Image (cartoon, rainbow, N blue to C red; front, side):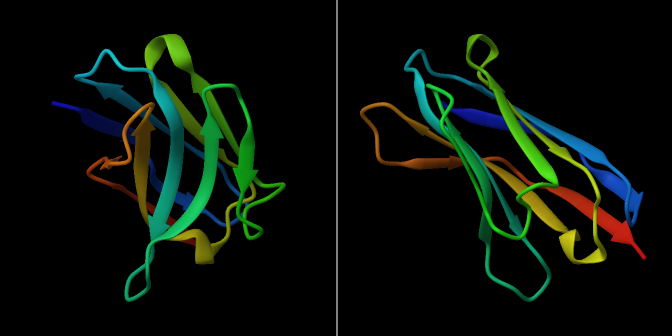
Length: 117
């Protein structure tokens, strides 16, 4: 059974930095795409950044230039370095993975990021 375990997050001041990591386990199939989503209170979940096995990266406009996604394929781990944080970045951040040959999206349990002004 696939499992995504996130770590990191917490509390930061505006302008500060936080890092997230997420490790996938439970499958021998290679992971096609890993991504980070976020969901603020009362809002819909939205894509933050994604990265393919080959290293192709996409960012949402609201984080481009501030957040950096990276991935260690050997460890089935995706990272999100968040710099120049803003209060509006406050949300629960979710890890997402899609495996090759599968359409199902796997989700982590979510980790809270809170940015104070």
